[in-house]
Image 1: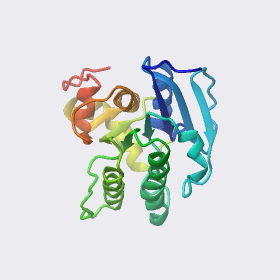
Image 2: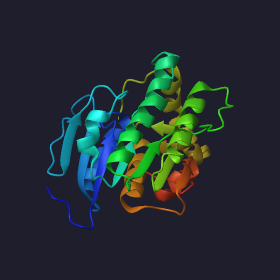
Image 3: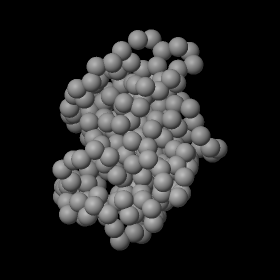
Image 4: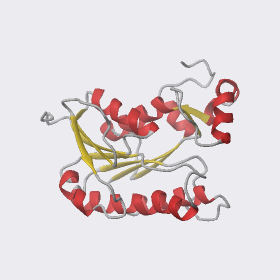
Length: 235
């Protein structure tokens, strides 16, 4: 399918993950998106006239993706790993090194592309946080802000509610899922549904939002963009 002049060419990285999976589906349904290129290690299992799939195993070297990344308008980067699911060195490699390497190749192939990055609440670009995950996400944010993209959107969600049942990675996530109905009412700006987060990321990448070269969106900002009310009575 050839996009119209007004439609955008989007890249979704991590499309077999929770947020990335919703992001891909949102992109395929989005009227401003002409083509969606899913890049990941595994097939998505989807078939759609807008969809182009590229399998890539080694994100430590994204040079082979130059062709697929040429002529793209935006990337929605959702690749990541859960804390505790991998060793610390691997967590940093996935969170920081893979992000920087992908950004390097995208910037060279499509210098005018927008970059939408799935970070995390509490991310610390100063590197002073005692929490490794916060430092790593902050390090990736800092690198993206300096990469030269005309627009970078940093999404810092709080707890991401999976929407559909899944096997949770650890006890903390099982607990958070169990108490989510209460948190949604008492602390609405600390939680976000995975589909609402993905929809907001795709919409920002495809249409733009806000002013400035780098825009940091905390959980409250994401909910506002998603059109969610703070009362807890959203769907």
